[in-house]
Image 1 (cartoon, rainbow, N blue to C red):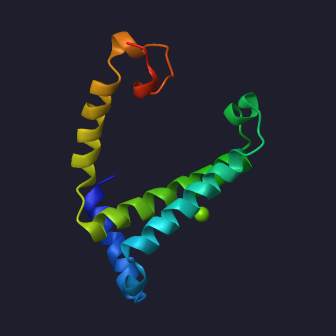
Image 2 (tube, rainbow, N blue to C red):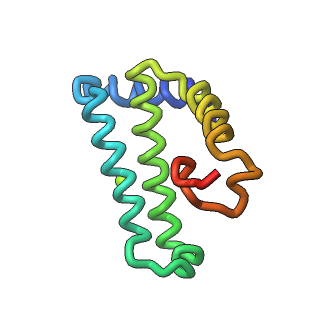
Image 3 (cartoon, helix red, strand yellow):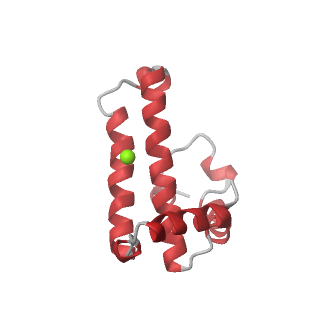
Length: 116
Ligand SMILES: [Mg+2]
């Protein structure tokens, strides 16, 4: 996926419908949260085993919600002028510093709850 091209496609989609007026950072953030919750809803009450063995119907639903989450995230970044590639790359580095392999391997503790 070409992020910039997809953002332009989403911008045109909104513009063609005169929806830019609704695509404020606040509204886009709320929509992103709603879509993330719709994704969570699919997994709600499933056992760990069931969550790893989804039916085709469930996989299709996951695909739709993942796309919705990505669309709102891309749109939010576009509206706020955030370079998604740059911030993700930076955050991976930050996480690497917070979770060095020797202290974190096989350990799910949050970095500030580790005893090192
Ligand atoms: Mg949805």
